[in-house]
Image (cartoon, rainbow, N blue to C red; front, side, top):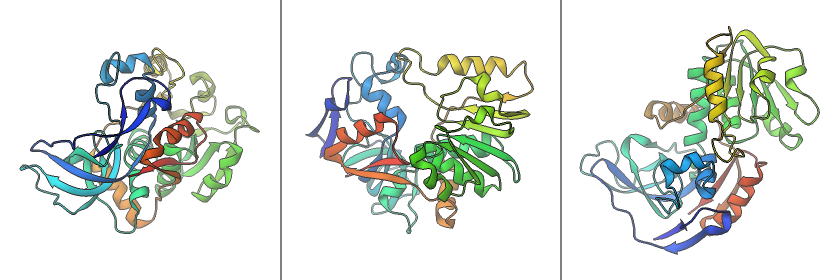
Length: 322
């Protein structure tokens, strides 16, 4: 099968399209014929081997798994003997291992059926970004109807989902983004859009019940200025520009600070979750959430897709078609 292979850490140029063996599956796994896969910040970190602390999981000197990728959408090719919910031929989306390839293994619990009205490209954009947004807005932020919610990075992968999920919960949503993304964020239902090149949300005088900070351009102290006295701040930027520990110092400081202030500072750890993936499927089927695919690239152009991702200005998600 064809796969995008990475034998060492580095820039997008280290990615090579190669012919490799099709992966085998365990009894609790499903083999998916990948039709589309999307790029996430974790994939960018794995590509470059930064922050260095991430190498404890991915491999110290080179990637332990030479084929990257987590998000996928495709068709079930084969199932392990303990798989009961899925069958060959089913169209699915979710998370797998090494999804930048024609075939990828995935745990059955990390896949759900793809809604008929959603394309493979759209479905592949959902899993990591969508579940992160849902966890942040619904579970950690506990957003309720009528609350004031502010989302930075509102035109990006997680932000576009977060805006729509917050609106679906009945919140008054303010999105913060660059000039080029203002109209997109407004089209997703945001009640107010702030162009960060022209306005500083931390000095606007408004106080928000929940702030989801995907951009990470403000310190905790600055972001707290815009937070209600008993509001919730969710710092959710990997800060991969900090080569050694990334966002770890911010996460630790937020956790400690939350013990001594009335505001809730809640860093986010997003993991695969069947219930959240099913909830996203329902939102997709109802039309309350639509994935924003900024651009698609063929698998052979993965290097170019990663180069664009690394610039940090993509609309919504970047998707590879396989």
